[in-house]
Image (cartoon, rainbow, N blue to C red; front, side, top):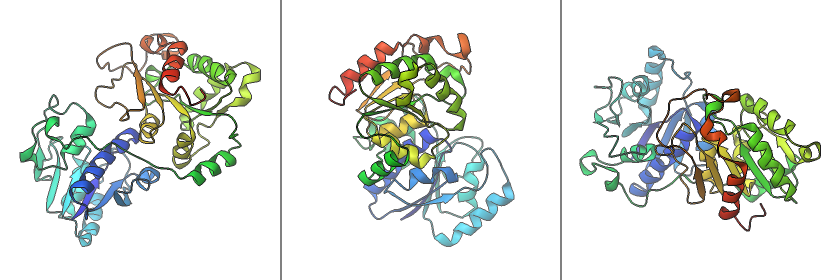
Length: 348
């Protein structure tokens, strides 16, 4: 069986989609799974052994470009795909498999996709409360499942691996010492500061960990660099040498390897949080207005800290600098206590 998956466009969603690929391979060991997704996804997909190849989606997020999607679909006809699984819920995401004439095209109903998908599922959100469950359900015949309880158990979680030589090379190339435990901080988050633990809390936690003999790596994209600088500048001068702001200095591939090097990771609700979970790193996940009820870190080695309940569609908090009060109220002392409980022998 040859399967084309139209993958998601966000880091966290892409990580959760690995549960689908793992389930497909468990059910069909000879299946060949190709994933079409934005080019930036390749560093993640190449670390998923279930994926045969990553096919770049050359169109920008949100662009319809009907003619280009038709061209892409027709070019895929020669590949002989037996099945397509469309993970995004948009109309445009279902066009390429339709134009490719793939016989079975599965996905959840959304944005008037009647006809484009011929294995259309109607989602009961209460029956499948987690995004990962909704992904995995698309691997199954819809006549056999009515809720998450019908899915194969245990759910196969995302799992990335990094080789020891990769870790050594990454530490050396960035002049990070192997003599101090490395703690990763992921202080960025999409949609602004309301989903971010305040930079001054990160700095206070970093100061305590550095005093214990650790070093800190701040990871994220270029847009997280300013937040990283705020954390570094809030530290006492003597501690700054042990806190490296690598946000914007590392590509996603390097960030994956560096997270694998970490003795522990502290992260906002973000894509890097899901990567750390897939690497099975001891992880403290900090949630505010966004909710772990839909997209939690999929790891037994993770601890979620959240002081409120329910999802709140907040883009900017009411507190100073746009932070959300529920994240301000998570103290550095609470986080370090969770770290001590999660990895008491890790040197943190």
